[in-house]
Length: 189
Image (tube, rainbow, N blue to C red; front, side, top):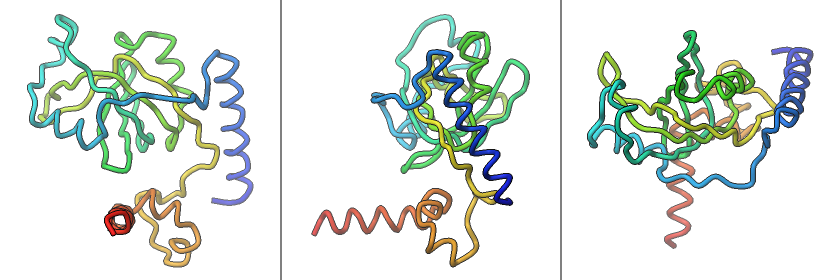
């Protein structure tokens, strides 16, 4: 990515922060209370009683509140799929225009990959197996002004890994696990 592209994207993201403020959304809220980490929520979805999508609207159940960095977004008309990531892992979430509402769904168009989101919803079973969270409420937790590198699935350049540790921790699962192990070891000592 050239410096000009990075500069333009940085300016675009700054403008999105201004647009969010204008729409009455706090782009950097003070607090979000989650009920589960993403790994705990994923385990709950795999082990717990998961309902079909059609059953969710009929009787309310306890929801999960999760938060993390948005790593992937795919939109299909009135349905948007996304993947959140935190320090424990990743979780797939789903936004339906009919469930979250028209205004919130429009706000999702302002969200970029690498932004932080909080989601409140319930697990449902996909047609092809597996489960994901159907989001009932979403809260914007932070705009990321700098874009992720093009190959955000893992840095390969050793020098960049050492110079930009934050990117290495963000994109490389092995580095993140090593960092957490070292942190827990030092805490235990």
